[in-house]
Image (cartoon, rainbow, N blue to C red; front, side, top):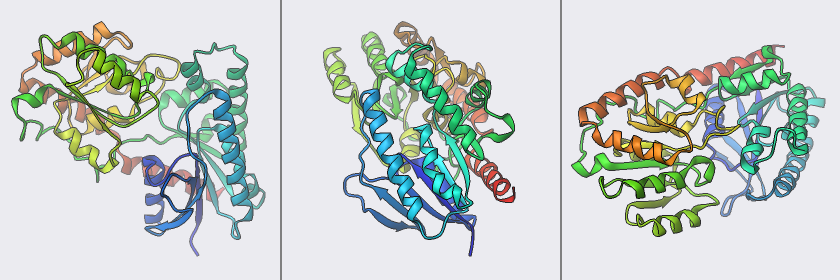
Length: 391
């Protein structure tokens, strides 16, 4: 019988792209895979999808106060712990995905039976809550989150995270560098066509002014800044903003677009299957990433940005340290993060580019982005698992 692995995540599957790509890659590599996750409306409690067993707990993910997060995370952790406890055959590896960091302790029953534990740090929780709630570094909740982070990383046999800036921050706070690896959430070359050779194909004059953003509708990602910048430039250029996704601020953003006089230029498409994103990006005129600066944003690397660059789409992006580190100065049109006037000026720069100049920008972006792709990252991940099982 082959090796077995249990993926534990406080999210929905198979819609969680990173987790599901792990699951599919593991199955292809010969592992027996089961995924423990949340249960959304209309989903079965348990099913098999492509030889991957999915076990769902009837908990819905909801945003709210710090206390609301703690309660939801705690209930799911207890449920995941129980499911792993009563499992007849213990897995060889339990791969726990954050947030929350303390979800890793749900793997305690499996560890006591000899399983190895891998912690996957999708986020850096102290900085996440600092930016979300405006808490100071010395706030008691932030200090507690740092303590939980250290304990969680120590409990795991190995840890992975999504970017080098995050890895460096974890190490600064005491993580063992030799036990922490970066597995980037890079685009999958099988799903995302690479390059800008077809950027101009099938595009009309109006398409060059069509901006696109796909992701969560929240202040962190600066969608409100994008709408304000669109209102500032509407007299000179016919920009249109296509938004794909949902989030806690959707209604407020719809109202803002109406109040700003650009309701006819901001289109809210809602959630779409991730498989449709490559086609949406290829038909747009440019991508827009307006992430606000902050303790979390300054360390994070947007997967949305990476997908835009991968297909050769010109991108207007917030000038954040993590973006500059990976992309350099020439792969995007940068603006001062959080500054709507600077964003409007970058849109003016974009409007002034010829189609050939836009295509050239897209090719530079694609050349940078193609240094990282999911097939290589999956290989690194499988090497980490082999090392765990061989220890």
